[in-house]
Structures are given as structure tokens and as C-alpha cells.
Image (cartoon, rainbow, N blue to C red):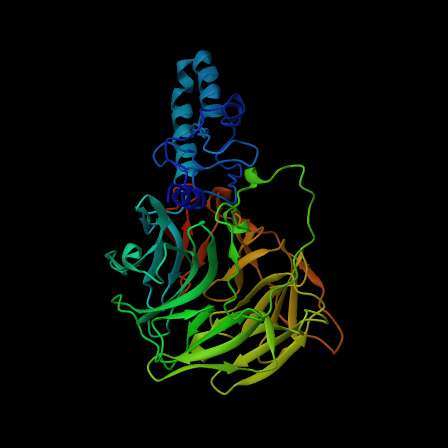
Length: 488
């Protein structure tokens, strides 16, 4: 049992708060930079802490630094040197220096005042249509010397009150040691139910082997599990699940050819999701990009019937939902991901599909606007394309680096986090050019727009704009606190 425990603990080990190296000379030199310099964070942000500012301490780390380095309050270093030089020149300069110091301090540290913040180790969050926030917090505990992780789920009300609707330690599936992390949350349109997507790991034998998988848990906003006829409250193998407008139907994707294929893997071997960049040996040669995963669509009615297939014969590589209008937009691919991708509009209720266009390429970032009238996506690493849903030949392109995006409330601009989805990046507003009707086979010119950086170019891993466009939520690097700012 000791070997089993050690293997399981190795898989689920977490760094402790006191395992932080001291400040290096390179970090001290970097501390002379202004807090306006970009504060980058690694993909694995568990222990990345640093500070910038006087009153509020932000934890940040550069790509070139070591994990856990603490960078001192750099905002005032250069200004203090200048202040000393002026002091020596005469006392008459004191009022000017103090004025400059106050203005610099206010500009450096008083970015938009947060509406509120939640000081928890938050992994995911999502807004409801009414402004409530569902969020998941990491919960690590031990059972018989085996270390497990089962995240808790909370709801923050609009008045600031918070309550837990799922205690992970009490949520058990199967007979062996079981862990999960929440990797997605989605509210129902009426704000009364939540779909919780979980990445799971279950020990299957005494050798410490585990079975990896994914499932979606259905809860109401009081924390009661919603049971599916003939099953329980979870949909095995379901990803990207969404409640439809009727409040009783859940549509979801299942990876093609796997259903819920969960091949056992050795517990001592990390999955790519658990591997930090420092774990990668520099001598390992780069590998070719894996082909896009393809998914089929299904639905289930928890209060009435079990699962059934939708859009049989069609497979999709990505899907975004517009649950208010009972539909979504997807990238349809042929089996094997051959041929050009097609942008399609889906109506699961009627099980109808409408082609919006055949794309020259698709690089990522598919999103649908709050009104459901526009979609945006990157056709390559440098060009974002915007298209009208009702009149698909009305299009626009803008030059912006590949990333993830969220729409403003008036849909005139998008907020872009540059870089890979699971890495931290800076946030910039990009104003969208007007849509132009294009002839068949023609493409719009790519507009050049100056991005507008926000939040002092600090980097964040997850962000989301509320459905009414009034608030921006970001997860702070390092501590993973949730901070909500008004959108201006």
C-alpha cells in the first residue's frame, strides 16, 4: 500500500507555499523596470508570485525568471533616484517632486478600481445572464495517505454574498480513489442550473494505474444534483455541455471514436496537462502537432429521457453556444480532418444545419457575439475574421495576433488575450472594422488597428466579460484570485 500511496501522491503532488527561491540578482535588476512593463506568467501558475506597486501587491513572474521569484516594488525605483538628484539641487524643487510622485503613484497603482474581488484559489469561473458568478476553487485533501484533488463549486451573488454548492470532498464516483479538476462551467439561460465539466482520474488497481476521462455534472443553483433517467447526475464523456432555452435539454459533444474511451496510464507518468515547461528536457526533439480532435453531438433531457444523437453523419472540431437562441456556431470537418473547414450554424432543437461559408483556414478563437448576429475567428495566426450570421457574405478582417477573445456589450470591439489558450497573456481592446458585402470568392482587405492595452499590460490566464458587457472578470496570476473591473 505504501508504494501505491507514493505513486498516487507523486501524480497529485502540489508545491507548498514555502518552496520559493530567494530573489536573484537578475530579478533585482528587473525590479528597476516600470510596472507598465509586461508581467508575464508561465502556463503553470501555481506558485508564481511577485509584486509591483505600493498599496496592492500583485504577484507576477517573467518568462526568464525562476518560479516563485519575488520582484520588489519597481514602480518607484527610477523616480526615487531622480528625486534624490533634484533634492540635492535645492529645496525649491520639493513641491514639484512631491506632485510628480503622487501623480506617478496614482497612475501606476490606481488602474480601474475593482468592483469586487474573491480571494480564493480559483481555477474557472462563468457569468450567468443575471450577473451571478459560478466559480471553482481547488480543494486538495488526503484519504488514507493518498492525496486527492476535488474542486469545490461556489456561486457569488450580485450583492457579494457567496455560497458553496458543491463540496468536492463529498462528491464520489466509483469505488477507488478518485480525483477531478473543474475545467468548465456553463449556466442555463434562466440562471437556475449549472453544467460542470470535470477532468477525472481514477485509480483502477493496486499498482497505482489510473483511468483518465471527462464528464459533466448537472446541478441546480442550490447544489442539488439533477439526475438523468436511468443514470445519475453525470454525463460520462461529455464536453462543452450547454443547457438549452427550454431548461430541460442539455446538448453536448463527445469525442469521436472514444465515447468515453479512458485508457489506463501509469500513475507516475504525468499527462500533458500536468506538465510544466521546466519538466520538459531540452534534449527532447519537437513533435508534430497532433491532428484536431473531432466530436459528435448528443443531447439528454434529465427530467424526461436519456441520451440521443444529434446531426448524425456530421463531426465538428469546435463549437460555441448561443443558448438564448437555442443554437450555436461550429467548425465542421470531414472525418480525418481532411478538406477545408466549414463554418456552420446549428439548431439542435430542430436539428437543422446552415452553412455560413467555407473557410480558407481556421486557427482558433471561434466566438459568437452576445446578440448572436456576428461570429469571429482567426483564419491564421495574424488575421481575425468577422462575419455576419444572417448575411454571411458581409465580412471584415483585422490584423491581430492569435489568441482568445470576448465581445464588448455593443459588439463594436473585442477584448483579446494574445497567445495560447492555456497560457497567460496581456489583454488588449481591438476595434472592429465595418462589415462589407463581398462577392463570391472575394475576401476583404485586412484592416490595421492599434490595439489598446489595459490593466498595465499585466497577464492573465482566464478572463470573461459579463453578458451585459458591464464587467470584466480576470484571474490574477499566482494567487489566482478573481478580480472584477467595470468595463469602460
